[in-house]
Length: 347
Figure 1 (cartoon, rainbow, N blue to C red):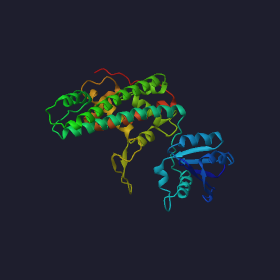
Figure 2: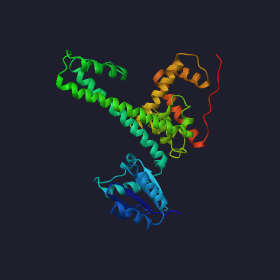
Figure 3: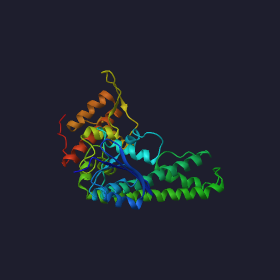
Figure 4: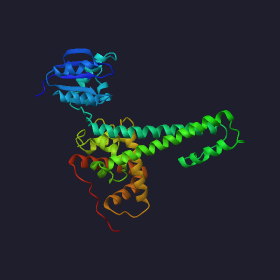
């Protein structure tokens, strides 16, 4: 049985603010501990709810608290911010964490396993290489553009045009820029190689991952989307009560602005934590929608897509398909069921 006390931890690299609140939310202890003192201090406390923001090292401390017999809870920093009173201090932040975890509408962040954290790290590395490669190519394009040279969009055009620009001695590009631009071009090539290596590592890991393999059977979901969906939903979808909650967290449900019994539904929200996942899911869904729009539907889901395209257009249909994909993914993960293909139709 967990005690009525709540232990709140405000995490940092070197010092951690620890706060104990009783069942009336009265502060019993609010002090600073060195990092190496925290585990010993937690071991002496009665089994309690240990709350902390989902920030750097939070998964590590949550697992350590669980080993010591406590019930760890990770909270979104955006949710905790609503309960901070007074100035921004570690003491006030710790109290806000303790108060936030007792709210009736709290939605904890799922605690990831070591395997999930490792897969997430591989994907972050891949995305980092890709982002730096795009930034590098954009910088080089902007530099040569100032000298009247336009490089068409796409990696192929960039790869082919830069050597020609550097070799052309009469195009007006100053000599002092040619060697640095060549270095940036070689740097870009090495980054693209790193992206391919990272993707190869991810594919090798996902081949043996049953849940990710099943998620790839969903419309518009490839290896990257399957992995990010798995990381967002958790091993059993424990972070969400149902598929709609999962879709809302990813930002695939409309905003609601209602008052006095009048319900107004708006567009999808921009204030979400998983913008990259949402963008990737919508992009994958849009690719599927464009294919369905050009041919006769083959199954009941494609019939639904065609009807939606005719009523609402391609992009709204893509968002709706992405929403359905997340709901189906949550059901597959939560109930540990394989993908069920829709029924075929004959036109």
